[in-house]
Image (cartoon, rainbow over all chains, first blue to last red; front, side, top):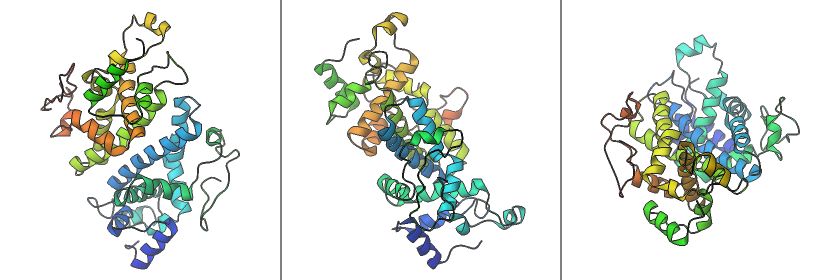
Length: 177
Length: 177
C-alpha cells in the first residue's frame, strides 16, 4: 500500500481518539521494515511494547493486587501479547494503513500478517508515547480496550469466559470476543 | 533483621539520593514475603521491573537506535536482569535493610540471597515510581548507574569489556566491574 494520505491520517487519528502533535511519528508507525529498513516502525513498536508493559502493570496490579505476582504476569502477558495486539490492530482497522515493500507484497499476496498487524498496534502506542506521555497511552488504550471486570477470566483456557463485549467505534473485530 | 529505624531509612534515602513523600512505600520495598506474605515487596518489585523496562527502553533506544531491535532487547535484558539488579542492590547496600521472616533467617543462615537482593532493588525502584513518577526512577537509576559509553560491550562474553567504573557513593560493590 502507498503511504497514507493526509485525509487517511486524520481518519486514523479520529478512530484512535488521539491527535498527534507530530504526525510524522504516526506515519513512521505505519511503515513496515520491508518498505524502509532504516526508517520503519520496529523501534517504535519496541517502545510501544514497553509503554504498554508499564501501563498494564499498573492497571492489572491495581485491579488484581491480591493474587500472586506470577498470575499477574500471566494476565499482563495475555493483555499485551502478540495475539491480543493483532486483535487490537484489527479492531482499529490499522492493517489497511500499513506501508509494505513491493517484494513482501508479492510474497504475502498483499496480505498483512498477524505479526505485522501486532507490530503496527505496538508502534502506534509507541508513537503516542513519544508524541505525548504514558498517560496518553493509558487513555487511548483503555478507551478502546477497558480491562474486563474480572481480568482473571483471560486466563481461562477458552480465553473468553465472562469477558464483556465493548466497542467505542464501529469495530472491524472486537478483540474481546 | 528487624524493621529499619527512622535513622536507617533516612540514611538509605540519602544513599539513594531520593526523598520519599510517602516513606511507607520505601519500608514496604524492604519487606521480604517471608516476613509478611500479604504486605511484602513483591508487587512493588513487579512494578519496579516495569518502570525500569520503559526507562531502559528509552535510554538504550536513544543510545543505540541504529542496531537491530533484537540486540537492543539483549542490552536491555542485561541492564535490568536479575543478575544486574543484585549487583545494583549490593552497590547501594540494600541487603542490610531487608526484613526477613524468622524461618527463612534460619534456613538461609541470615544471609540475603541473590534473588532477594535483586527483588529489593526492583522494589525500591517501584517505590520511587509509585511515590513520584518515571522521571524520578530515571534520575535515580542513572545517577547511580549511568549507561556505559558503549552499552554493546555488555553483550561481550565476559560482560565487562571497556565498561567505565563509576561510583556516586562509597560502593560496597561496583556493578560494572
